[in-house]
Image (tube, rainbow, N blue to C red):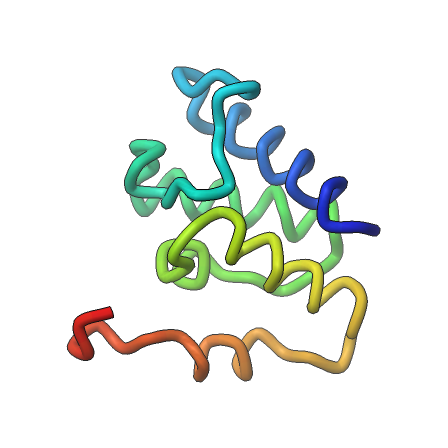
Length: 100
């Protein structure tokens, strides 16, 4: 699965959970906060992604991603390199207190 397919699938999941966001206006530069997605929405999106892609990803990881594009890169790594774990990606995320 390539990055464009993952991005399209992510947008499908977002629109299913946050229907006020038009599919064709979602930008890879946006964060979940900019989408208006709260923690419950992120959990629902994470569940949908898990079901459709058979990858382990948490709502926490979705919330920590700086942008949808960053999330697509992470998911692409999980799908294309199955040995990469979510825990390794989580460890690379900025901590809440480091100002990033």
